[in-house]
Length: 255
Image (tube, rainbow, N blue to C red; front, side, top):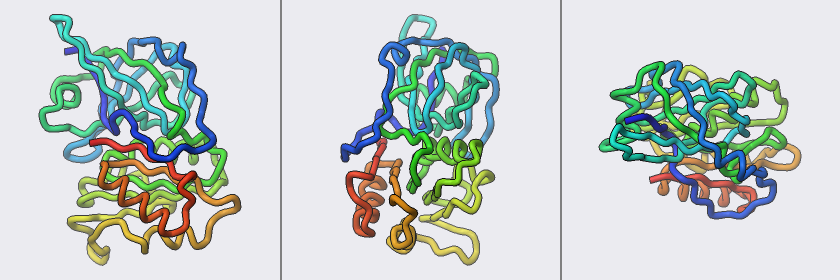
């Protein structure tokens, strides 16, 4: 089978908010041939796949794309995946994929794909969850839900932005924490099953969120929540309880 990627599936949003990024339907409808150039292991079950994409129109952090795999008999499989890399002019993008049990697309990537393989992709898609770096960002993610949020963190660093940005990321165990080597002072990691010595174990809680809402930056936060259905519900409730306006919460969920 010819290829596709990980990260959240097609986004479901609960709150309509201002600031949606415009998406060119014409640009987003064009299928482009992408060449896999590098594979990096992130965790025992997640890897990052880097692609060269001639003619890639560029993206805004938080956007996703569609990947299409085609088998020798003509059978195709399509999936939506978040873009992990920051926008740049290199003509490359990165996707970070979990190896999903029985996943025909993620299974191909994790067991068959090699540098030099070609796949089809189109995008970028959706302007709802995008963050162009124009306002303070409070990011909450769990598992592979951190993928589009990491695009935002990388963009913030690459552009040297001074706007406040904070990331709360949840993982079951330290070895399951995607991008663990890249996090800095902007990030707080929460572990639900086991944690390093001295770090409490448990779900993301009011104690993690409330302090960030108690001392907000000028203009307040734009909040982005990404993860499973249960995490998205839990995290959005924490935000609202801490005082975050519902119209300034953007949610992308999967599963």
